[in-house]
Length: 213
Ligand code: GAR
Image 1: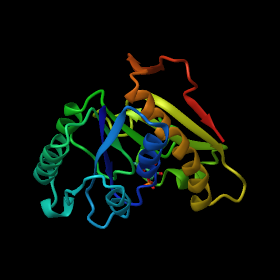
Image 2: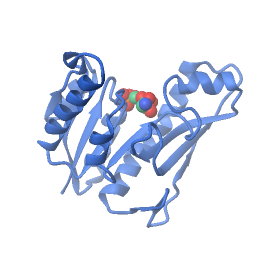
Image 3: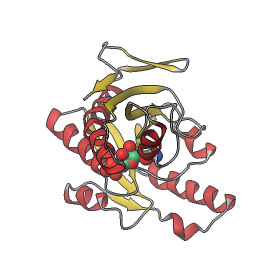
Image 4: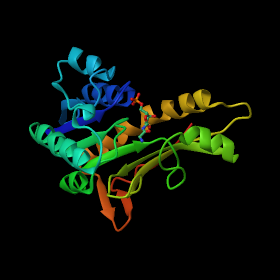
């Protein structure tokens, strides 16, 4: 049984998709914990209702600055390690992590980012895609490395940007595909079907690493 720890900051719909798909498809894995940096994160409630252990490491309790960030990450790592994860999944976890934290989970931490990386790292990705005149937008699942929103790409999901799209409409269209892509890629990891080769990721069973609407 592989142990998955999921980190969230808010709604938690991607986490919910992973929890439900894991159960529905009978993965040889369990979601061992859902951890949030925000006590009010809505996703914590869903996790608790499923009987999944939850924890909060509130970043606000640590203050600001580099020392505070390092202290927060040290506490987060302590809590995460308490659940002995084989895989750490960032699912709408809105904190920049220190290199020390990331190094601890190298090769076993995934993130989903709402853009077609390497375009639009950071925030407000859909708004920026619309303003730039992009005709396609999407989301990327990647292994986490020390550079923000970089790291070997596991899969991408692409949707058209339609005339008249606003941020809400585009993000809703992308989110539908995120909910297909993220559970699938987590399953690949659990089944040992992902191989990092240099900066690329191979899906060993040959499944498509591109998701289209
Ligand atoms: C998702 O769209 C995810 O791609 C994005 O936050 C949303 C979380 O939704 N992640 C980031 O922006 C990470 N930088 P959810 O809480 O409903 O899964």
